[in-house]
Image (cartoon, helix red, strand yellow):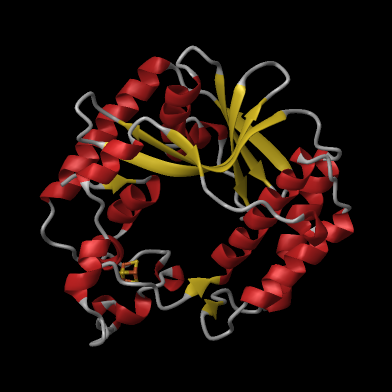
Amino acid sequence: MTEIYSHSRLSTFENCRKKFEFRYVLGLPEDSEGVEAFVGKRVHEVLERLYEFVGRQQLPKLEQVISRYNANFDAQYDPERIRIVKSGLDKDFYRALGVRCLSNFYRRHYPFDADETLGLEQRVSFNLDESGEYVMQGIVDRIVRARDGAIEIQDYKTGSWIPTQSKLDQDRQLALYQIGVAAEYGAGEPIRLVWHYLAKDKICSSTRNPEELEVLKQDVIGLIDEIRATREFPAKKNALCNWCGYKGYCPAFGGQIPASHDATATATTATTTAATTAATTAATTAKTRPPTPASELG
Ligand code: SF4
């Protein structure tokens, strides 16, 4: 049986094996969600919707975009589940953060005709090896044909921290997506990795050559081998524990897995079979989602 790996799955293993066990071995749902992740999801879904309308030559006003964001924020904000970790900050602060991200993006890119959208929230699946034993997948926020002809793999960030250029030049997530996008659009296409740091209204980019991608593949294959051989999943306290959705279950903080959790059943759903893998290998397919009716503009 071959599991499909993602950047998130690899990172979770690297950061804390107990969290990896909760999520990917036991399939345990998180008991809470950090407010930063919540805002990020609301911003992503509104930007996806914005470009759906742009693709239909229906350009919403900024006020309509913000109105949609606020409506989604209110409809999905559950104070019992959303956790605000940083002291002195509240729901209104984080709501305003999303408004700032969207306003910055809208004003910088209006009227959204500088490039061509090739994919929105697009799933990319690809093999790291010839035999199909090491399979990765991910979701790209937006795939673009830029004016200079290059394909851009674009990623939206709502956090305020901006990595250095050397960090971005080593970023694993978008580089992995490049392998999948190249398989779909052709290995000879020039590809650029682009990050939109929305809160700071800053755009950063990087590129990878074939040799760097080959090294990356071998590194990730080695990491997947390590994951497959792992039988012990100790907790590793770290700076992100307060944002961990399993903290309430974590033995490092006196927690335990709820008795209601059926580990056997969920562990089965947490894995993906080789048959599924074969169906998705080296393919890039848009998520199936019904189009948003024009009457819901903004
Ligand atoms: S709370 Fe920290 S130590 Fe516990 S599972 Fe989460 S990340 Fe790991």
